[in-house]
Amino acid sequence: MAYQHLDVRHENGVDWVTMNRPEQLNALNKALVQDLNDYFGGLNTRSPARVVVLRGAGRAFSAGLDLKEAMQRRAQGNPTVSDNLDSQHAIRDIALKMRRCPQPIISIVQGSAAGGGFALALASDVRLVTPDARMNAAFIRIGLSACDIGVSYFLPRMVGASVAAEYMLTGRFIDAQRAYQLGLVSRITPPDEIEAEARSFAADMLHATPLGLRLTKEALGHAIDANSMEAVIAMEDRNQILCTRGEDFNEGIRAFFEKRPPSYAGR
Image (cartoon, rainbow, N blue to C red; front, top):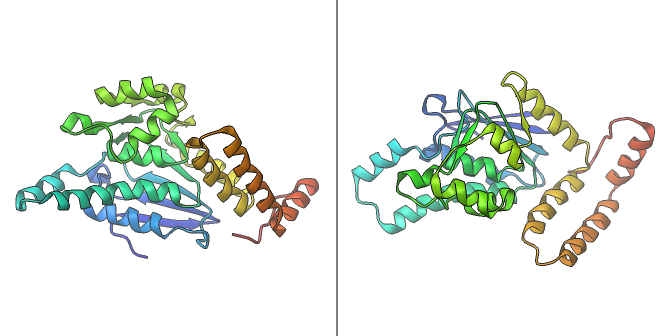
């Protein structure tokens, strides 16, 4: 599928997805929002990709909503509440699709990840950053609520309610070192090494069976909101039994004892 502002390269089970509006700091205009929706909405268990790496071209991950385009559209007419809600839903649907797709998503964050860009990073499963990375809930600094595109769902669960309130109520930037201290990101890596770091993470994920990897992402998402430990363990028990039913489980055991990379047939 052809995209206007999204470059997708498939390589050995990994989709390398690049937001490509570097002159605009990969700001989310209508076309890029549509591209991201189409891409993440098209991922399923039959997709050749088992892992996704999301990044931005140029010096920023994403500066969030393209305010210039948004204001131009606003000046051209008088959008109704329904029009505004449709636009809001289009952006928030990206985060929902990222969480629902079976593939783990690794985000490479360099420079700014503000507003909607911050939301994309939070909706990913693993975040890797360069030393110059800066993230914030920029919405509150432009007359909006900081609670947008899933930020108020993800951030408190990752860093705790008090720290989330600190950054959401002020719009302050979280720099790379602070993000690492909070456990918000997994690695701080120099720009010339961060792609190799992402490849290493992806390679380790691909060592899992396709079913095991998918069920792990799914269970982690459900466990965050589970009502009890018993509910989580019941889900874990179900997933383990499902994983043992396929030939990939036997291949994983053989590869372990033979000290070789596994060769999985499933998806």
